[in-house]
Image 1 (cartoon, rainbow, N blue to C red):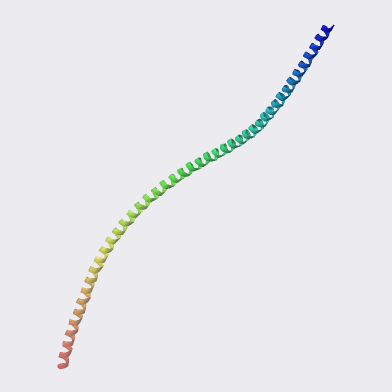
Image 2 (cartoon, rainbow, N blue to C red):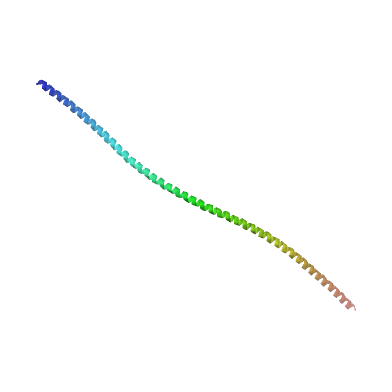
Length: 159
């Protein structure tokens, strides 16, 4: 019986060691679970942060798209403005051509008018010389006739 008792005691000792080992393993499992929970919490925090960053990235992309659209719109307005400016410059160049043509015509008219006025003044001078000559001739003739009349009057008075 002693032998059975020793076997039972030995089995009880083995059972005690097994329980201690089981408790140690259970403690390690709890530590592992706690460690796993901490890591899970960290993963969840990382996911939340990742979601926040993703949302910020989406907002940035949306803003970038808006700015790009504004830039494209601005470029289109710039192109339109450049086309209008080109058209206006062409119109100004046409106007300058018309102006140059008009100025040339005015110069020609001034030259022609000056020539005509010069000719007119020449004719007026000739006419005035002729008129002055005629007037002087008439005055001389009048003086001669008066001198003749005065001589005749003097002769008549002497008689």
